Length: 371
Image 1 (cartoon, rainbow, N blue to C red):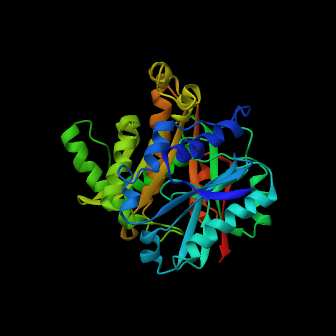
Image 2 (tube, rainbow, N blue to C red):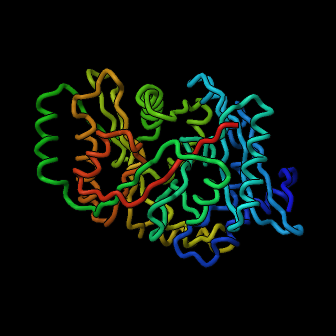
C-alpha cells in the first residue's frame, strides 16, 4: 500500500470515482455531479485556489484505489483566527486502519511542511462548504450541501490520532404551520421593534443589489462564530452563481433597521433529492431527470441565518423562522425540512430548533490533531 499525490487528470478521475464504488449499494448516499467535483479541484474555476493550496492524495494497494484525502491550507482562516491550523477533507476509504492512518499522516506531513501545527477536518474545503463527519443519523439521506459517510470512519479517524473539536447538529421537522406560541412571539416582536422584513427581489437587477447586501450582512453577522471563515468576494460570487438557479426568492428574507441591513435568512429546496436520481451524471439523461424531479422535491433546508451584532437580541431571528415556516407551509409543495447546521455550543439556536418542533436527528463532528 502506498500514498501518492494526485497530479494528472487520470489521477483526479480515480479520486472522484472512489465514492461511487464505496457507496454503490448504499441507498442513502447522494452522488455529487462529477462535473462539479472536477470544477472543485480546478484552480481556474474554484476561487478558493486564489488564496490557498489544495493537494489531493490517493491510497493505492496493488495499484487499486482504496482510499483518498485532501490536505489544504486556508489562509483566510489563518488570517482571521491568527492561528496555524491546516485542514483535511474528502476523506473516503475501505475499513482499514493502516490505510486511514497513512492518509492522515500524509496530510499532516504536507501541512507541517507549510508551517501548520494542527490538522482539522473533515472540511470540503471550509466551513462555507460541506464539513464535518456524520457520526449519528445514518438512516436517511443528507440534505443539500451536507455530508454523508461510512459509519466506520469515526473509528478510523480516532485510531489515526484525531480527537473531537466541535459537533454540529441538524434538526428535522415536518412542514406544518408554525407553532402558535412562535406566531404570537413573532407578532409581538414586530410590533415592539423597529425593523422590516422583505424577500429577495424577483427583478434581476435589484436582486443583484440584494445579493450585495447579503454579502455585507454575512461578513459581519458570522464573524464571532466558531470556525467562521470570511469568504472573498470571488468566493461569494461563485457560491451565489451555484445557488441562485435553485433559490426560491420568496424563501430568502432580509431584515433592515432604518434602511440599514440587519440580517438575512436563506432556505433552499433539497436538491439532493434530484441529485440522487441523476447518479452523478448530466448526460445522457441526467438533465431530463433534473427537469422532471425538481418540482417534486419534498424537503427544504434552512441553510443559513444571521443577524448583525448591533441588531441582535431584538427577535429578528424568531421572525425569520416564523416567516420561513409559514411561507413553506403556504406553498403546499414541501413536507419536510432541516435546520442545519448548528454548533453544539449555540444554545439559543438549539432552543429555536426545538421550539419549531424540530428533532435533533443528525450529528456531525469536526476533529483536530496536533502535528
